[in-house]
Length: 111
Image (cartoon, rainbow, N blue to C red; front, side, top):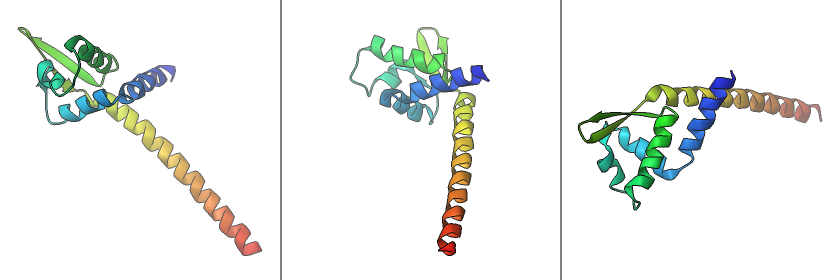
């Protein structure tokens, strides 16, 4: 499962940046050309393209070039893998907290 760990590490690293999260939110409403995606951000296009390279590199987006226009779209399978990992962690911690609550109630009633 080391490969899964590498994928998750890169996804969470990509999600750590607010610019990349904003791009993913925008792509949630459909594919968009890079110029449209870069428009709201106060940065040079080469800097913005580095963000897109990271998102594409970890598999959160995919791109297609038609003529001179590069269009990006979400690649939800990778995001689903991160969501599955978080759901597994949430389930484990909820179970542990339930066990702690039961133990505390038991010790409270013993006193």
